[in-house]
Length: 177
Image (cartoon, rainbow, N blue to C red; front, top):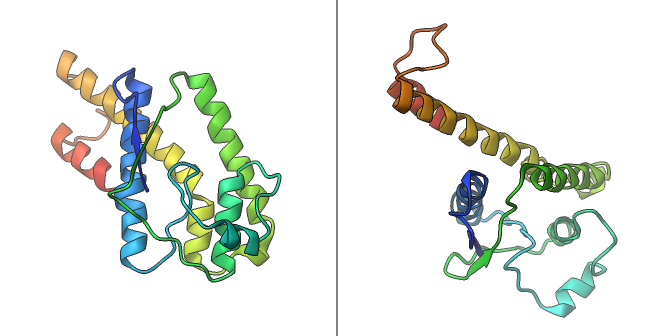
């Protein structure tokens, strides 16, 4: 299902995570589903038959048990679809320390699964396994862009003045990279 943020307007960090999960749900999972590629399991908003979970051995004691189940379902040839009209609201982390701990656990858990190369079936699996690294980078990019927009709007200052690039062009390029 689509993951939406309950506390999006709590602070800048929750706002950025809200944007991140909107992009993850709509763009990433929606595009994978459109091309017939299993969309993954995000831990929240997942429905499956108990018998299907049993076929792959149920939950194991892993750092990221939801993704472990996804990898094993994918390996077993089970297709996981995306239901964009099934919306689940969760609360995002409100402090930097907690976010760093969460993302560190995600990254460690993905590498824990990545070590077992038998679970990797395609380049899409590799991309999905390494996804927390990418989403962390996107979050930091959004925060950096927010800082730059703030500096530009308040002080008329672009901190990247070492190369001439109009702020509108810079922002456009940063959105598409």
